[in-house]
Image (cartoon, rainbow, N blue to C red; front, side, top):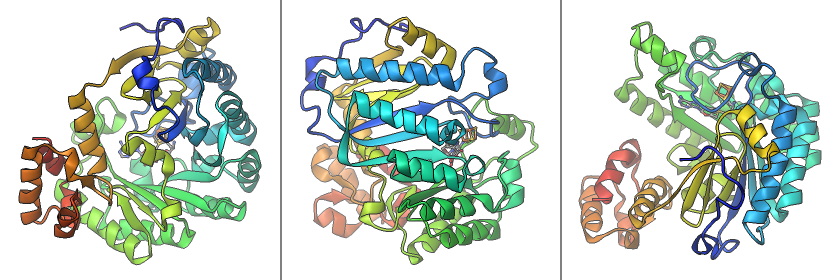
Length: 400
Ligand SMILES: C[S@@+](CC[C@H](N)C(=O)[O-])C[C@H]1O[C@@H](n2cnc3c(N)ncnc32)[C@H](O)[C@@H]1O
Ligand code: SF4
């Protein structure tokens, strides 16, 4: 696989471009900078110390503008973006002016749909009322804040640098600046997190008045500082039964406060509060992922960029697209992905998407209480509360 190709060498087949613009189209922008690295995180992100003089927010933004221009050319008539998601890394480290420049670059290359959803992730410690006001003015419509926990000892294990109260204060500042759509991210199952710690986090989330919550079970990723600590026996690995109990606790508290699950790890206060960008991923939409290491998907072709910000900037400065590899999804890949992603949605998956063996398994799973009887009667595979805890196992059965 090549590490970079000239714009002519990576050509999207006409079959992939067919129907472009009739499906939701999203733009993801990856910001590969963090002030410090959290011990559990294996995302493609770098501290200033790691980068030295090899790359900077300035060289990244220059590269991004070039990539978006090349992207628009490669898509022929590029559709206006229905959704934009600036993720990271820590986008808020860039400050509101640079984030405004990012959105301007997307507007210039693709255009924005009138009702576009425009999200940026932010770390609570690098936000302020002025920051949120700047984002609103630039056209951002949604903010996603990494809270993880309200318990000081849990934040310490996770190496988070913000104080326990800062995420809630930041969420309130975002709302006061006019953001109707604010998300808080939680991590549950951290070693040492007790049920009362999660209760404290949930109380804080609910007090913040946000309309969206994402909650992820802590994953011990290979190669991270957390994985080394677990391997050395300094910390216990998250326990499956504890994770299941915590998930039930979360779901009960959020739903009784009017935040309902619409994807296994995501809860929203209304249909409008759901993250349309992520729904695009889960429903097989098209998106261009720009920035170091970003992944893209258009019409069954998937590709990914070079990971290092210095390489990214230099490839683009040379007029090449920063694609490190690509694959054309087979029918089997697409079927597996569809089942894996759509089954996790509250609307479930149409049984017509399954083969005869899958439909038989769906009936058996419903008899075991993993899929709802009502869903099945309406021709859909919809996870029950218990099924959500065993979603991966149900997927494996349905693709049989
Ligand atoms: C990669 S971060 C980017 C946004 C921002 N820097 C932050 O930390 O919130 C997005 C979210 O991914 C989740 N995440 C990252 N690594 C994880 C892991 N190993 N296990 C579970 N969740 C993880 C965290 O909840 C985090 O808020
Ligand atoms: S979790 Fe967020 S802040 Fe922490 S290292 Fe990963 S991207 Fe950076």
